[in-house]
Image 1 (cartoon, rainbow, N blue to C red):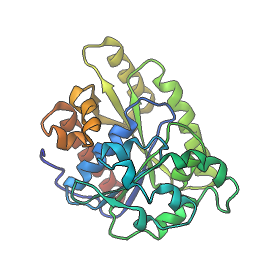
Image 2: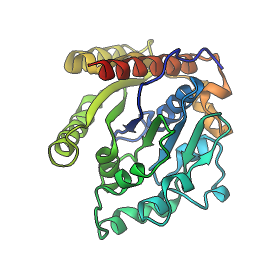
Image 3: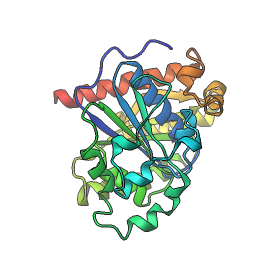
Image 4: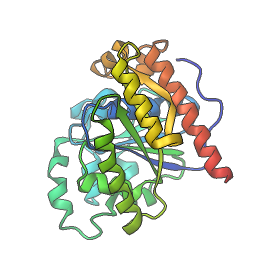
Length: 269
């Protein structure tokens, strides 16, 4: 594994990784950022809130092993610690997802505190977790709303493509709505540009437009298109384990450093 960040955040952070558009590298970012944070020695739990369960698969959790999962946590049958499974990465745990989660949007609507189910679950989670990362579904429904209500901040993976800003605008409006009505402390921690291809002039133009529009909220680190990163989930491994020296791995290590630096700045403010 490559060199990890040399410092850790000062207190527990709950980070929602969200974008209502699919195929932007959201789950890949969740898996590899969680792995990079665990590599520094922090205890991290990744909550797979996507009914597709790709984060669970990408960390090598077989579907037969998911007898306890995030659906049971949301419905109050078990607590978060009971659902968390150890992964092959030291210090990294995952609360897996199953297809049962597809019906959660309907069932949660009739439960009390429907917008706060995840927030309530996190209040009883082990205090030893230093980061809780939430891989949100590619939609702005009740599951994503639960994540935004529970989170301290949102990290937005944004693909370098023509319609990127249009989709981002809708997400930012949703975040503003959640901040106004349900979670006043919610912040946009950063936007990370993914699937960056320096050979493509459109990629460069999109990156420039995003930075001009959003300014410092955009991370300096960009995640390149990388075959090894794309291959890793089929082996049930994060890219940082599958190929520690590929360009994608190096980018996620840099992203973790930059993210932790931003968190230290927030703590110092």
